[in-house]
Image (cartoon, rainbow, N blue to C red; front, side, top):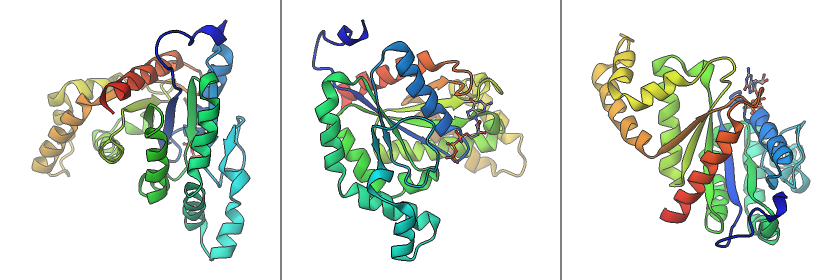
Length: 264
Ligand code: GTP
């Protein structure tokens, strides 16, 4: 039975999986799929929603920022627009985040994965003090992995791919946590092209340089930066809609969890 599967070897803490992605990358659909997969396979998942503005969460959350912070009230009270409202809500929640970590710690013996959904506007989490505080609070207590969801069909142009990878590189640099790219929507576009570009520096450089509008020297330098970045990276192709690749997703999370234990 699933409940006995983790009773062996060392203290098995849950692995925290922080899911980050550009708006429209399919983050919410992927979260839904991950939660469902846990239910179906006996992996014990615990869900944290950090998006104060989501109106319709298609899966149940164990901890939901919306229970603590009312984003619409925050907007009114502080005279803010939607993004300021979300950011301030996250800031307010971050001040109490030790309580959240405490709740997760209490449940730790019976949890395998803590799935953390972040605000739809990625920069609210990746470029805010509260995003860093929340990430740090998790990472100082549990093995923590960051998943960056990529919209694969929208990343087939080399220059778009490059910008997306540079963004992911920034996340790795800021968090210093194991990072996995989840190439989503593989039911529409397979992610082989991306794997090829990541494995073969010259193929990618040739592809980028076909775009004449791009500064060749800059693009060569950026390709070199990314080549280094890929060495530190895990990647997996998934379809949040069909469920393809989800088993592999969790195997990759486990590898990242091991990497965390070895390096952090
Ligand atoms: P925000 O809600 O803006 O944060 O977007 P999100 O990143 O959470 O994306 P969401 O899950 O809402 O998905 C965006 C769109 O992509 C929706 O129309 C989804 O149906 C679609 N989508 C998500 N995952 C997949 C997938 O694996 N395959 C296909 N074909 N479509 C997908």
